[in-house]
Length: 277
Length: 184
Image (cartoon, rainbow over all chains, first blue to last red; front, side):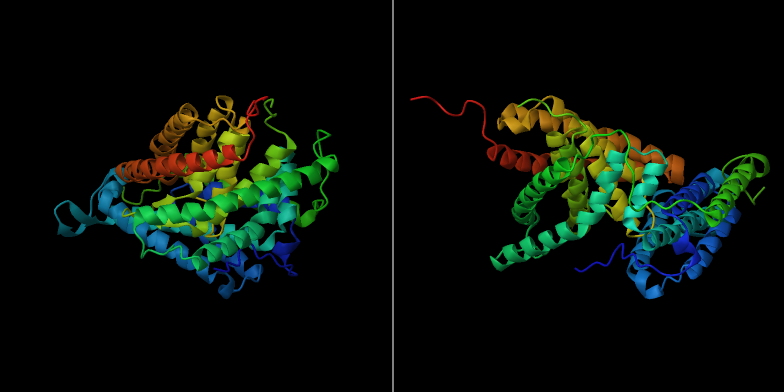
């Protein structure tokens, strides 16, 4: 159950040296680019770019293997489900029909459907490395400070950094309570009936909630004693001023974003790129 | 006890730790349902509980931060569902203005209000917000997202109501209710 997530470590690479704010802005720009476009060329470009950045950030394959497996399972399920629920979605979008072969009844494999589903698959795939990279190369405290710099309320930022700080603690609590209950004979695996299992999980949840509520009380007192929330603004210990590289990175991402919007409006005249007409 | 402000230090800390709790439960405690890509998520009970005790903004952020960070561990957040999670908890959390969990008086009518608000919240989030965002952002097939939305609504509403009410009852028992002492 030991999940090594958000295992940020400081390395000496270009990506690590960028400020958290830059990485967050770039992440948002690139993911929005992919979200707003259904053009396979734009998506492929971002995909290649994000895997190239993976290399630059020196992220090892072993670090992200587990995540990638989850992502692939998800993508394949989605791929199959899309076909089962809407075998002709591609035809509807692109307006033409090139039948490759028929499986049964309405389940006809068309070129359009394949193109639509592959585009969608790549669309999801291209943002995955960006998210992973963002989390592996950004100091959690700096992340909160960078959110504050783009005008997110500082109290919400504090909540976020508290989440990142206390996630391991809550996870440890959960683990020990769960082991204690199992030692007393509470069955949690799928050998038990659904309703019984539900009840057993509640028996873990109740102590967990009350430990957390106690901890909330403790942290609140500590923060209030130090005068938290007195002023309207707040300075951040982990904040780093922007330098030349930060502006270059943000500029490049902004250029990609605008280019994609221009392609959508002037080349494709819709969010879809249609090679069939 | 008077109503606390929506932005007190306690609310913020509760949001932070609530989101951490939501994340842990979201990752490790799920009971698979027969429909793919959907699980019986105990975590929605926690966000409903935090919404009722600390207010709708806290509920929203608990579900939003918790769900988004959980998705980050697989790569990138599935924004439409992350937003829907937050919306469900925020609407459910409106019950904060109707009941006073800190007074220790949680009876049948309070539980009824809590469940009603959470069912409404989940219905809006999963049957309206999530499928529409899925279609707009990801161009998913219409009947697929509405089927998933409907399943998610039923499962999450059950979790929010059952788990949330049990937690609320347990929480109320730890609070001394006003006028519980009588002069002899």
